Length: 160
Image 1 (spheres, rainbow, N blue to C red):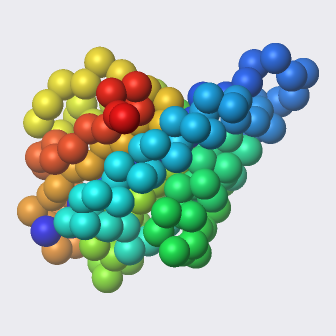
Image 2 (image 1 turned 30 degrees about the horizontal axis):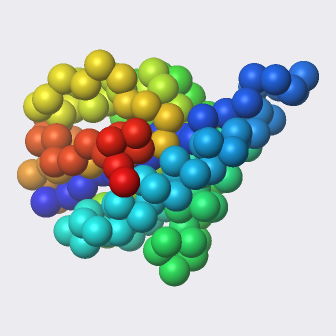
Image 3 (image 1 turned 180 degrees about the vertical axis):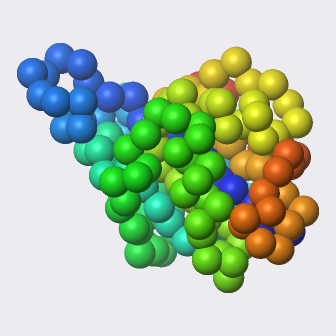
């Protein structure tokens, strides 16, 4: 059994004149990220054993904030995760080392919402910023990934 944890980046600012890659988190994005990371800690069955993030500023900071709730694990930043494509994300996952059981990914929509809808068993209209989705797959090898089970959806506005 393998799990995938998708943690969408926190709410970002559109006010600054910067590239999409350099957009930073808004204050509310930081707070909601902390809320979601703290809530994810309450589910030890889904504890991540590998951390991957888009290098975009908003995703990188979301990963770094979240890591503080998990004893600051090593985060791998990969340009391939700066994607909005389900297919690019799936390709990345299929190439994971099979020793990894529960990777966590910090990245972007539409890739994350589409991944939940194509690979999970419950429809999700939208994974909100700082939202978390956990899916389980009855596989031993990442190359065999197919339809799985949606185990958990965390939406920061619904958390205390």
